Amino acid sequence: MDIPFLSFLPEVRLVDDSYNLIVDALFGFSFKPPVRAEFEDCMKKLKSLSIPVCSVDVPSGWDVEQGNESGIKPEFLISLTAPKLCAQLFRGKHHWLGGRFVPPSLATKYELNLPSYPGTECCVKLPLVF
Image (cartoon, rainbow, N blue to C red; front, top):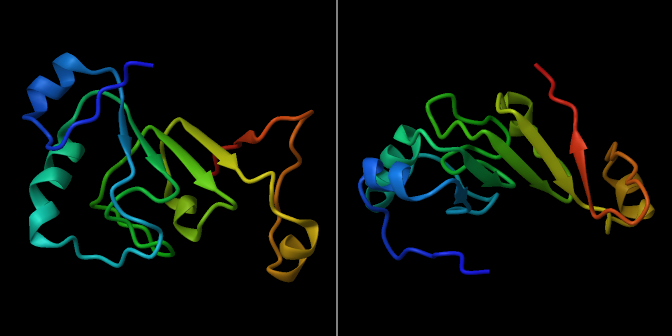
């Protein structure tokens, strides 16, 4: 699909001028703030972009449960399996959930209130809650 992958994050202006979207998938859901020193420049640039940022599961720099008001503020969030507690603090425009594969027994065990998926869709758009 000719999607470029970068081994470093160029200056903010170059990114804004050269790309239409950034996919944020730096850290996993087990991340605990603060961001280590080697990621500080990257996080500063991600927070300064004017193009949309799409975070996967948990926006980078956020605690999985408590979020991070000073962290990245993505326009899109794609939650995996189930929205994490920090998703309650998401203020972007679009929140999607990919998790149709969760067996009903697992959803019951962990008291997950998951939406139904229309037809054969593997993702569903979630309502924004403010």
